[in-house]
Structures are given as C-alpha cells and as structure tokens.
Length: 199
Ligand code: GRF
Image (tube, rainbow, N blue to C red):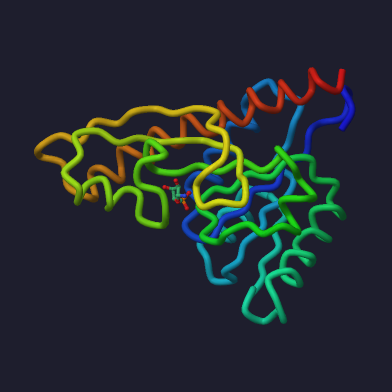
C-alpha cells in the first residue's frame, strides 16, 4: 500500500450480500482513494455473486468442503487475495470462522460486522438471540477479526431499540439499515488511518 495507490479491498460474503452492495455503492460515490477489488464467496449459489456481477466487481466462489483441509481452502483464497493485491479484507455475512492462514497474512487487516452489541449475542444468530432473550436494545458492531468467534477489538457500535411491537423481521430490517450506513463509514475511516500510517 502506498499513499498514491488506491487501497484494494476484498469483501467475503456467504449469502444475500446486502452489506456487500452497500459497501460497493458507498465506495463508488464517496471521495476515497480505495476500491472494492474482489468478492470472495464460499457458496457458489449465493445471491451475492449476482450482485457482484451487476455491480461489475470481480468475484471468486469456492466450495470449502471440496478441499482437503481448512488450511488448503484458505491458502487457495489467500492466493487469490495476493494475486489481486488486496490490502484489506472485510467480512460481510461470511458464515465461516477465519483460520490462521488468513489471520497471519492480514494481521489487523480483517474486519467483521456482527448484528448485535458485542460481547452480547455472538455467533450465527445474533438478531434472533437478542429478540428471543427479551432484550430492549441490541445493535451492530464492527470489529477487527482475531482467532475467536465475534471477538477482537471493537471499532464501532450502534444501538438499535427493540420495541414491544417489533418482530424478528422488523428487527432484522432495522439492523440491516444501520449496518448499511455504519459499515462503509467504519471501513473508510479505517482505510484513512492505514493511509496515514503509510504516508
Ligand atoms: C448481516 O446481518 C451481518 O451482520 C451478519 O450477516 C448478515 C449478512 O447480511 N454477519 P447480507 O448478506 O449482507 O445481506
């Protein structure tokens, strides 16, 4: 990464990809010396791949189970990241625990979004767990990825109220709306910090 060259971002996603799309659109419209250069997907039938095609973002899709080991899968992903000169990786609905191969290659350069106020409600069902727990508030967390599940230094959090008339669906909609605003902003702030460090 140099001061002049755009920071190259890879997004990892497994599903619908509404956050991926929000990130790409924000990067297309905002004044930032960075670009979404690659989508990495671990489910070849995921809708996010269609979004990437529409948005003109290169993508690669894998079937992790077809590899001999997690290390072999991650090494293949890493080869693509290095081949595309990726500086920073963000996980946007990537339903897989990142292993050492990728963590070591991108120390402090792997970021995740989670739909709860961590450390409350980590894991795959953050929205449902908060709702079923009867919580009156939950939210969104963006954090640096470490070897744990939804642990790692927190970069930003935003609270979302759970009203008595909320359903899981209405809560999901509110959380996603917050995610789509917050995540691109936090990524961009982090990129500016990295650019300053390399200036
Ligand atoms: C988001 O709620 C994100 O916080 C969680 O997975 C969901 C992905 O949604 N990790 P989408 O695929 O971006 O629409």
